[in-house]
Amino acid sequence: MDTTIKSGARLSGTVTPPPSKSAGHRAIIGAALAGGTSTITNIGYSEDIEATIEAMRSLGAKITKDGTTLVINGEDIFKNAEDIIIDCRESGSTLRFLVPLGIRCKNVTYIGSERLGQRPLDAYYRLFDEWGIEYTNDNGKLPLTMTGGTAKSDIFIEGNVSSQYITGLLYSLPLCDGEYTIHITSPMESKGYIDLTIQMLKRFGIEIINNNYQSFYIKGNQKYTPCDYICEGDFSQAAFFLVAGAIGNDISCNGLDMQSMQGDKEIVNIIRMAGGKIEYKDGLLKAYPSDTCGVTIDASQIPDLVPIISLLGVFSKGDTRIINGSRLRIKESDRLNTTASQLNALGADIEELEDGLIIHGTGALRGGIADSCNDHRIAMTLGMAATKTTGDVEIKDSGSVKKSYPHFWEDYKKLGGKIL
Image (cartoon, helix red, strand yellow):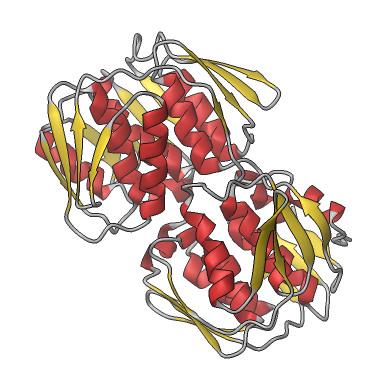
């Protein structure tokens, strides 16, 4: 699917971003591991969330959909956990969260899209080697097949590869015998996602002791307990509308929890750091058109925000620098490259560095043809860019938004976006 957007159509109105995908994944897994019935409401059925739903069904959970509500019963989880195939589709969260649960299965195979198969699992492979767990893969790529086994009590893992590894272990280890300490051997990145995991686990009765992100203590033989949960709005999706507001549109975002543990809530502080005006009033979060200035952003804690922050940089005075962004190269696309190349295709001036970007604030975009490169966050960034171009914008593979925000273009049109 390709989309052509008429230039200069100002977006105006109120939008409700989708429910948090990060919270949704975690709630579904927690409910499926609980020995009873949980109700998860306000679920957004993106492709990634669908992957997690089907994965937990494969492990034995009974999951029923009722509109945007999921009724999940986990009484039969792992009861027939032999020769299971789990299709993670394109969802890195589904894959990395669920691989450690494979030690509870007699034989399980994880499959997924070609791009997902290229995303590294080396941290898990090193642990499996230490634990003596048998596994096979395709030269380090999917499919991954593994047998059950036992984790060692002291676990050493890097904190600067992906917080998803830590989350996967935090879901799995409470079900195992013994006591465990996860030692973090390098600075912890994406701490907000770890906070979200620990908060969600607590809702389902699981206690984790966080020693200042340097180690995590987990007591084994804990039991997940059923929990009813309402998914909050997603700040990573709201970020597109908030930046659009800062660069000249008139958009308010509804359904966001300003007390949220989501790491991508940092977009509020980033807009303020750049000199933008943003306020929360009467349940609405709104960024106002502002004269912003370039800032330096550490991407290690908020990698998903980099494409849309880069668009903010295009319309800010001076240079915006993205640092510590090497992990962006192993996302749905090489996001350092795709952010730079596709915004440059519309007239931006962005330099790609080994682990970051320098966005020279030009204050203008001409339009043209750009490619999402099958990356939902690139597609949505290009859509917001089109509100400020002097010429029309053609977005190749605009349907990639279905991965996280299937009705993005519908909301875009409701706000006044002109799709030809």
